[in-house]
Amino acid sequence: MSNTLNPTNMITLDREPSVWQYPTTSDLDPANPATQARAEYEHSLYVDAIAQGEPEPVNQYETVPAANEAHGYATSSGEAMDPAHAEAVVAEAQAVVADAFAADPDMLAMHRANEAQRLSHERHNAAVAQAGAYGPQLTAMRNRALEDWGAGDQA
Amino acid sequence: MGVFSQKLANLITGGNANPSVRRRPRFTRRDLIRMESRIGGQLFGSVPKGHRREFFCLDSHTWVWYEEWVDQATRKKVSTTTRYEVHSNGVLKVQEGQPYKFVEGQELTNLVWAMHLYYEEVARNIYGYDPSTGKPLPVGARA
Image 1 (spheres, rainbow over the protein chains, first blue to last red):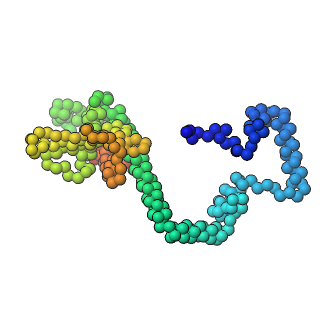
Image 2: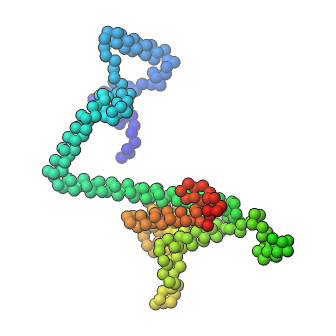
Image 3: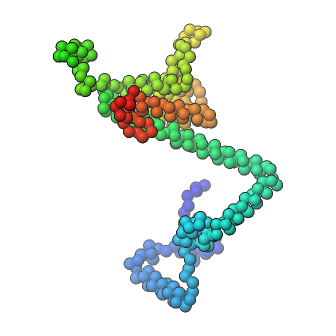
């Protein structure tokens, strides 16, 4: 089975396919008068809502990086998390994991085995990458030497 | 150096004896690999008496280990060649009469370490490059 994502895989099951339609290219075209009219209408709704005292919507995708930069942590809604509170959350999570491992030694052993395997794979990949770096550098030096003081590429 | 002695030196060496204009000997790719393999053969410790060992980088993704010795029982020359092919997912070990296999664990660590030493020695002592920067070494610092 292919892992390739395609739009049909991404349609949620609670939608009626006949209802759900993808925007067409012309719908997204800024030069399309209908698109312009819709954008203007949506913008007017937004401006009216703000004018009536509605809070401005939080753009999570802009807020989270800013919060992360400032504090290192952010809540899922994008608000910056107090560092002390964040540390407490992490400590609690670690305690939960430790309790789970204590209750199930097999799970701990499996976790350790997985971790060892992961580290082993990382070491292996690093070694292979390193091995792959020397050959091209050496052949480049050799080729330069042949150009500078070689007698051509005779074997 | 007098004119006579310079001409004599030219006759002996077959070239211009003035170091500033003397040309380097002309090498083939095989010559260079042979020089490299002399260094490579010494990276794995002392070579047993009667053995000949070569280890060299053949091309950008292939390394070769060649070992030759005389079998004491038959008095015949025996040799074994191991080729290491560097692929993106591992280093494949190819030996005559043996199934191909990826090098793993300590063997891979040792091999990469040997490649590293080889690169350092060859870059510095044969081609005159600083192995850490890849830039040419000053003339006085070359072997």
